Amino acid sequence: MKRCLAVLGSVFLLFAVASSSIAATVIGGEVDFGYDIQRSITYGYAKLIAENRINDGLTAHISFDFDTIEKQGMCDQAWAELYNRYTTIRVGYWHFDVKGDVRVISPVTIIGQTATARAEIQHNCQARIDLPISESINLMGFLTQQPAEEELLYAGGISYEGDIWGAEAIYIKYDSSVWADPAVVLNAYLIPFDSTKVYLHYGLSRDCYGAQPNAPTKERKAAIIGVNYDSFDLPVYIRGEIDLYKGLYDDGNTPWGLVVGYKFRNGARLQYDRYVHAYGEDHNTNIVKLIVTF
Image 1 (cartoon, rainbow, N blue to C red):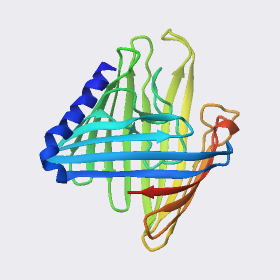
Image 2: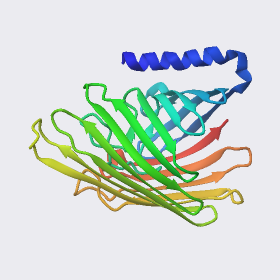
Image 3: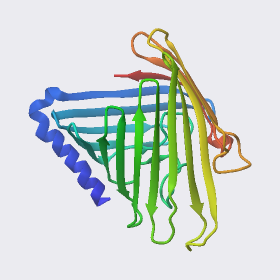
Image 4: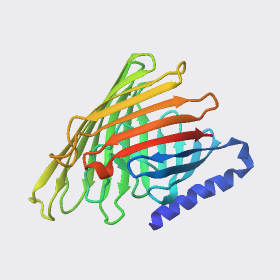
């Protein structure tokens, strides 16, 4: 916790130092309002973002958000990024995810006794380094410490990003002295037509039941196929995803999700989110909302 506070303070200090170049600070955000059909309650979400490009090689970013359903308001991200033509280094607190283009379903791909099972890490202060090999190929390394233990969680990967297709492979390791097993993630995408992307996410990890190295384990898999259509010429956009595995429970639902939206000319969007969760009906999403970005 002290480390997180130190990093947050450092990012605030970067903004203070950059006050003389306040014209470079970009303020933005998002406001959502809608109705949660699943819970029969109104839904609200707000996010405020400030980003300052301090100079040609240093950027600082901070954002806050609040969700009326989860009743949570917090510093969502706070990081500083140092970059040049050879490398990019980011330190701070942000959403590090390995789910590729997946935006609706929550895949189970990350191992660790306190690591989230949503293919996303935001537990503690983090560091990431990107090393571009070429215009299309990039090497990545990631490191963080679990908040409740002294063990480290780290990841490494390689990715290719082209105009028509791309792919990446990521290896994740939870460095536990009691028990550890790596997770492997593969992501790929294909753009067969303009404004249309088809993508795949595959993740494999294991849960350990017990504190001994030979304790029984449960294999977790995610194999998500998705398609996204979003055109500059048409106001309607759509995204659909389905998980070929059933997530945490073998006898649960087959997870699938759908997002359908309409873009107004003033920048606002009307959107419907539907997500059938493997856990059961209590975890499903069924929301109609108006989204305004600024």
